[in-house]
Length: 191
Image (cartoon, rainbow, N blue to C red; front, side):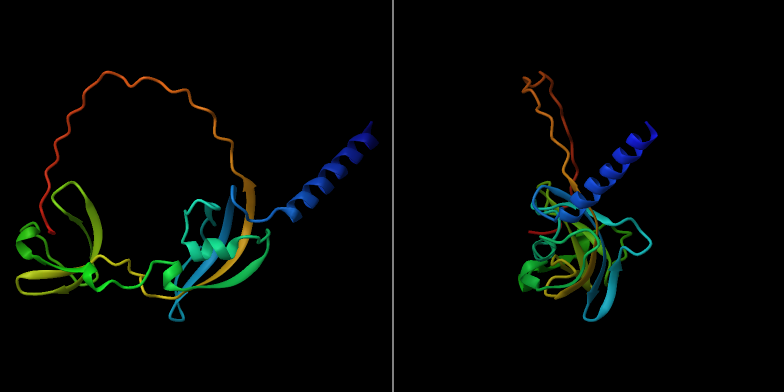
């Protein structure tokens, strides 16, 4: 009996390890990886000392250039990946820098270059922007992503690859007959 158990344990170990060696990053897999991100040769972000980054391959949860580069990698594999702006956060768009009058901000607001602010369009839509310049009666805000126009260099190591969990089927139900009223106060900041 003890020998049968031992043989089963060894067989399970071998099957698991052979399977793990064949698993690759591909669409439908949940992937965990460690990374270090460098921009212009300087480290700007790293998972060192943190949980690995986890994402679902093939559904656009990470930038396209990195997702493409990770395709086909296996657990334990390491790679240096350079991602051009077109496959990351795009090029810098000059028209994405807007001048907003100081009167659009709360009276006690003190703008500082580099500060991230949430700008509302007065129609319920808002977007983050970085204060690029502070003028006497206005503030220049940049709606470009801070890494727009930059080539990103990643050092990555695949830590784990799992099948995505099955999504249970959901029965369609008729909407409840309720009414919700929402009141939103917005300051118009951009036009």
